[in-house]
Amino acid sequence: MGRPPTRPKKLRDGFYIEVRNKGAKNGIKIVRNTREEMLKAIKDYSKTKEVVILGESKNGKWVEHPG
Image 1 (cartoon, one colour):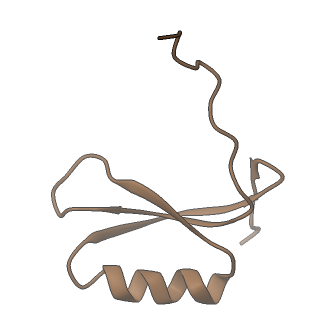
Image 2 (cartoon, helix red, strand yellow; image 1 turned 180 degrees about the vertical axis):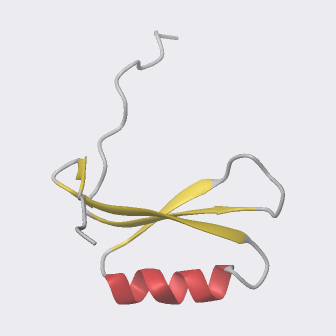
């Protein structure tokens, strides 16, 4: 048994959403490759879950979208 990692995990390139039960504090992060796939996932999960859009990640960093 070793020491647990302290470095944060690297983000994959893609669009991130967080899906959680209604009224819950935290949930799971889901990544999709394209914006269209992310929108479809939001549509599917929003029927029974609470969905939060986290944004887009490129090269391990969050992308700032103007406007």
